[in-house]
Length: 612
Image (cartoon, rainbow, N blue to C red; front, side, top):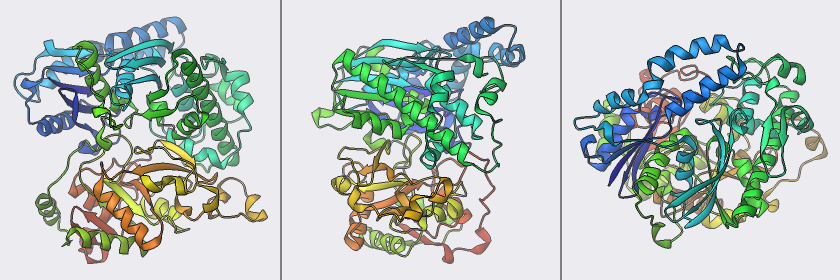
């Protein structure tokens, strides 16, 4: 049985192909169109998935869409009626689009599917509920035969948080929280107030939080949020405008916090950092209470997470260390893109009633390391690079690894383009920029000269799985860079009294450990464990770097600049290489040095993309 999963029309559109319950391919539309968070129907991603499965759209048994448009329209209409006459302007702007397109989304989907080729059958079109898609992507793709399932995001149709239990091929939702009471929308509201883009900049707020102190937690709990012991909560909507307005917050919110929303280019103050720290603390407390109550109610030993809030890797780390569950697993594409995977899995197991195999009981998940996107054969890489005007040298495997380690030890930023592209928001060693984590200047250099983004943003370490406990306070698999753990104490650097007295962004340039480029100001790191079974070449590179330096860790950040989607093709990689200050590009078995390229091909990427 073949099922095509689709998520589209909000943000991060994606497609996934399932064949007899196995995920064959999955990709986000933005990687092909080069439009960040592309919300359009995923024509390119769907065509890629069909080609990867060697099938036509007419051979697909079902197409599964990740939410139910009619229920979403019901929520929109009922919300406007509940708040009338407030919000009429927003209502007037939204209705034409809904009446023209979204209310009749089945017809729109039918027309879009026909563009994928002959034989598309609208009668085979299924609709999952939004949080059902999230929950299915979490549990059915996990390595667990049984697990509690927690999903948290902004909002689907009505649901903002759901809790359930998965067993074998079954998934039962036990309870839900409904709009407008949403942990994701609370985080987005503060993201907006701090001057970052909603549905894009939330991870910046998480990265900003360690520079501040959680001084304003009481402000949240006294005015904005009534959080119960079991993790359920209600928001006071007098302070928010997202139900009916055109912004996330309102004048009452500004008065409560004593400031208007920060403009994107305004300097960040200590106050902004303290607000970010307070929001992060509140979010973590809600996540912990929800997880604890779910553990008590289900008795499950394992926990699966999905939804946009599950990308809060700091909170995930706190849930793991809380010890209520023996193991947790987070869907790597936890946001809306992963809904394509979840809709397909829900159709296969819950609609078609097909049994589930838990990867032969070997503990592996169904996501194949999340390496589910396009790959390019060596000959094709060479042809594409040559057509782009690139000068390169082809190396055998051992020489390639040695040349790359040479570049890393010399302090180069290296573009690493290998194998199948990752599915989800993280680069995991297939479309990555890598560097030496031992360099005290590397974090600032990568942010300002390579990524062209805010200097405060942290970088993640990729570490050999067998060495993770020797460097971080973690001895668990974290293949998707979705758990935060502290650097072990013996790897930390003793701070001087003067350094310890620094506040805010002044903390940035103080080395804190043996691997300062990936150690945040609170000694934390967003850890990726690298496994030979899912990414042999990246594992070989880390092994060789360890043999040369004694350090089994590399800086790993996504191969793109600020505001650009992660690169997909060899041409994308070459353009980013020529438009940034990356010194070395390793694409397949091709090695490219910047000084050997035609200077006429140099691009100015610094202002090529919008702020993300």
